[in-house]
Image (tube, rainbow, N blue to C red; front, side):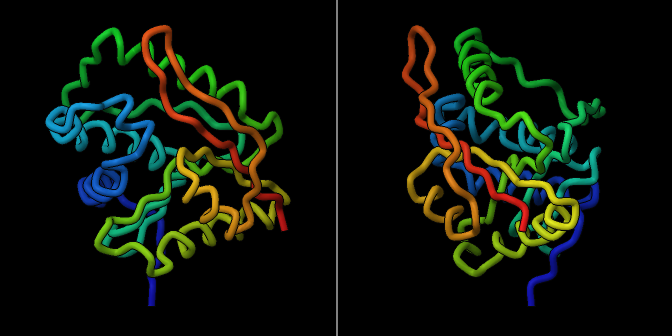
Length: 195
């Protein structure tokens, strides 16, 4: 039986490791961190920082062993400040340009109405295809449905579009991310209406 629960601070190292392994070939992350060594060197700090933001809004779920995680942002997308536990990652100018381009495109395609935002769904590669992602999404689907709110996400692969369609999401928008000097990934914005 899958145990899904809200995450604790003590889960962060395992959550960061799970996210890092699950997203090792993700088109957006590899556009931002194309060098394998740099990706590996920074993954704990980057994913740990992101996980602490979800934790600060009580919107981070995981399986009991943190082999699968779901990082959500609650309706209204509240801004939170989190304490640093590691030195900040220093980004070169080209990465800052890519981050800005990505953020601009995401903002332009975000639904204007209140919604739950599935920022990351990640299952460690050794534990994929066992229904863990579905169990994690269901925890928030129940909350969103009770409040009559939709759920929204972005994805970068055709396979993920099919996976999320299977779970009630439909493509809302599509776009390409790029800078003047670099072609980035194609992305889909997907919305699941309240049930």
